[in-house]
Image 1 (cartoon, helix red, strand yellow):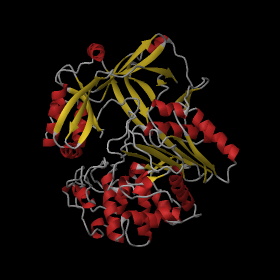
Image 2 (cartoon, rainbow, N blue to C red):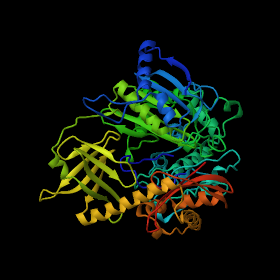
Image 3 (cartoon, rainbow, N blue to C red):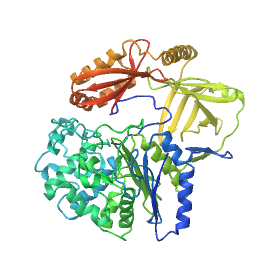
Image 4 (cartoon, one colour):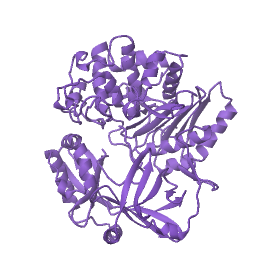
Length: 617
């Protein structure tokens, strides 16, 4: 499952379901000293997202960041000039266990998708499948059900691969060791013991981009029907073996003879995932077990195939088509980014207790793979990727270098105020002056210093984003625009009366949160609100009037999947209050008949639920 979010203003909360060193290898093309120098620079100082020109940037060693983020194991492979220059394991595969090496197996999560996409394209190349035919004309064991939302348009393989088929189900939580495992048909139909909703068309095929792991499950059934081969064998014979990915498999669960060579998955608090590595019958979407050098071999195969140098799986022409970006900047499997002159293909992955990412440039043959066995491992993987980009001079992913300018106090005072994101009640951003420093703060989060880059443009050190103040025709500041990740979010400046009301409410809530954090007592009604919300979701009738607008929006979007997940957990056996967090959120541990979960809830003074989220333990 892949998640995209804004880091600077990540305020809407939804529902979420000491190190040892391994061995290293060097490419014959790169001298071991040079490769070792690159390696040491990459791991000795993970740089910040933003570096202010003239400053000495602060950084931390990889081992320190692993400790900070509770990541027990990391595997890295770096591609340079078309070859694997170095690979290295850091930390341990499990607490008290062996060190991570280049042979250690990790679950790849959604990185399974672009690798599996090659198998589908291979069948297109052989003439067994068509990219643009109605998949129902090629499916045998199951058909995509008719839907009024389709407007009479069929689903095609091209749309499945590019997340434009209009199909539901974003991602899959997998199944713990003692869970019953559904068949693929049960997953497609959302029938027990499947823990996700039915995969159905809910928008016109081809009309828009919407990430759908469900679409890849349909592709898996399509491949099974077309080839009559077990999926792990099909992947081994047509993709993994030809590329040389000898340490990779789509077998679910992992065969017993390989389990000792795999990493144990961990939660973001450093504790192991209950039930161990989850099983994913949705193999195309999340079923790949692999190593960082094996994934690097996949990247190199695609790079060389694009150049016509090694077409072990796909022809040059089909590889070009695979990497042609469409809606959402997506190709036939991977995401496409970078400039038109220097594009790259990439994908992220997140399974229960495993997170990682790969990036590979199409033309100059550079790239990298980072795999972790931690639920918050993608954060570390991003930091590692940034360090690699800095060291190897990539045009993307590197730290942004900014130049700070000093502005007079009178100019800074013009921007002080409260800004609202979106219409009606929502997220408020307060800009204030702290001495000669402009500071931004979102309610419930720590204040962030802003540095000026121009008279009306500011940046911060923790996130590569711009804040631009906009003036009206009379020369007064009227709005604030956040520029981040190619998107613009506009915020309207409130008048003095509205700003005072929001400030008073925020101050009162901050004081209440501080007192509750000190007392460590749950908010009245918090447990009852969680129980009622669970019951309402299972019944398919959430009380949106008792939710903040942001939480209500997320609940509407995720209701079908939430309903199935919570229903499959069974009856509530116990609810235990654990703690109050610094921001005033209450944390509960809820044991269901079929699983243990952790819930966070924040209740506003008027009794509405500001935010609520849960995760399986």
